[in-house]
Image 1: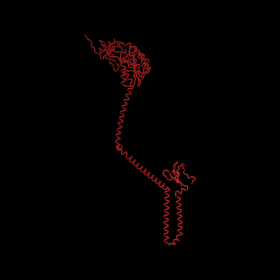
Image 2: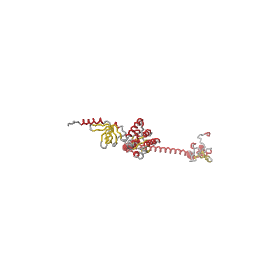
Image 3: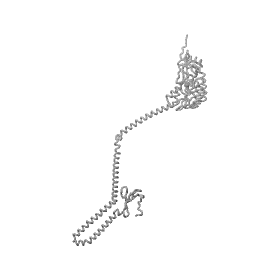
Image 4: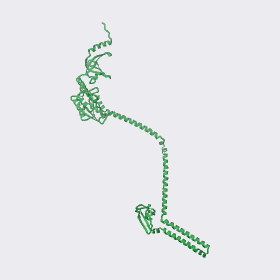
Length: 474
């Protein structure tokens, strides 16, 4: 018996030609295992049941239409065609459509609602609101007993303070949950309770997350004036709320991070600025210290006497000049006072009388001496008889002349005596302060008291009016 010997390629090609035409449209039910998601976006996994398994490939273009990414353990129906892969010599299913068992009807409703809302433009970026940079009131719409609110509070309180968290508690799954979620969003807007809203829940099956796939919730999110972050399920879970919301967070914790991201960036910026300012100040201080050290070593500062020598000498010169000027001024003042004292002494009547008396006594003494000399001369030159005869006439003339002179001197003396002057109607004014004679009206002030000495007494008076004009009296 002879056999045709085939090559591996020939055998594989024969198998391929037999299998692929007969299994072009197939639907295989099984459990996903060994799921691998490539960076290219293609998915490779195995479909298995209790007795067998088969390889499957889901390319990126078909995977993009899935409502959510599959995971190990999912029961699915894979629709596609059978294909043989010659390089490895195995056969596999090229999956064109993947339907999750038990949720096929839900996935269909999800797909229909998604297309409906997409046609309305609810997913368009133009309708997305920007998140507030520094929110002070953060609203949360979720279950009060779940882990979501705790995760959000842990993130917010651990990172920052100074804001309010307002929880509007709702059911997140089961009958009536979608209406509660929508009403909570409307109430938060009606009463303006928050600057930003986080709407979400933890992970689960598509049935568990279905409240966030309802049109009533999508409508409340779309009409909200408050920016909304959708945080439903895990990173691989997608809902209608995620597409309508202003921002999608892969997890509730990530939503809390998004809310405070701007504040965190500002804090980091401030921290960097503080560090830069600190380093700049340290650098400036070091530079100034170096400058101070250099200045301290400068000769002008290390030897201050060299800096102050010139001003000190100048100060000494100024002090000497000032002392000399003061001494000279005191000398001039003393001379002026001495001159005024001498003039005052000369002006005293008693001094004038004493000097006049001294002159008269001097004249009388000289006269006596002259008479005695003349008599002695005559005695020697003549006899007594002739002396008396010769002397009689001249002597009488001289005696008469001398007597006239003496009489004139006495008259002059008498006229110079203050009392005789006072009898002629004159008076002498004395200042009451120093008993000095007042010689000028300039020495008097208005209402200044003085004493007027007359021939027969004294008068105490005061200057009512001072006039330096002589007037009609002289």
